[in-house]
Length: 347
Image (cartoon, rainbow, N blue to C red; front, side, top):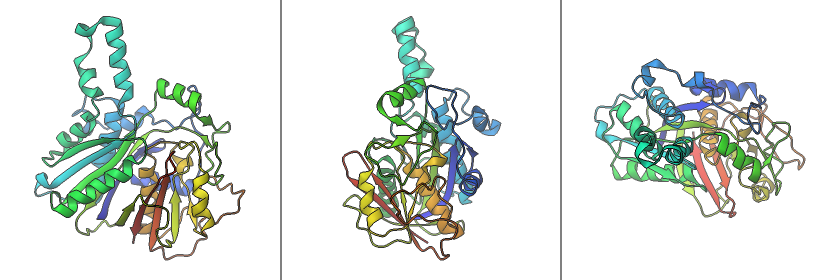
């Protein structure tokens, strides 16, 4: 399946241009306004009047989903002649938990009869995908996947099935997760937070440091190759790390897995590594953002410097001096169980 468009909402703005600018500029300090340092999405990023008037009662989770999905659609330049052939897949680890907790608080404070029906409807995991479908006028299949281990990888696999079966000609596929005070507290209690605000992707520690983030990243995936071509997904594997010899391997080391020593197998294989999580933060759905970075590298034939290149093990880390001519990139995520998910992308 072909990558025809990218849409991003993250701590440093909205749109593929903002993301590419961040890849070129490198690391920035996170926000220290909450319980822990975190990469938060500014409310000003989610105030596009042309979209918000259609989703006036939508929460932050939904807005991040809609803005990133809509931008991926626009970035593709594709004009949909048959909207029954557009599929939408939203993957998330925690869903709209801010709205869910707010709805529960209302029940506790005011009783079942007086809780907000709007909050209830928006607390449903599939609400955000439904908003995206409504705004775009899609009449194709729409689904939400909720998973901790490989949400983005499984969303991509499902998109490939829909395209191969002919059920869809295009699929908007992406991930969204958000931060709130409850998530900050959980991360503070359960994760090791980076005291200086820096995620270090190449430490490979059994107790890595994290800096939680939030945002949405969507891709327009197509059955055929279109003008705005970023690359082609040729494989999604959960059978191990032995997936050929790509030019670059982008790893999802961001402190969320709890133990990142499993990535040493990839590092010791001689692979040239890249890691961009310090730009957008630690998320169980961070694979979508790293995948977007890999897609931009293939399209632009540019290697972006790793934002925090600390490399005590001396592994091969790519940077701006990397030779031109990138033909293949692997995106690798290892979950807590040690199981690996590998996405292969070619030019």
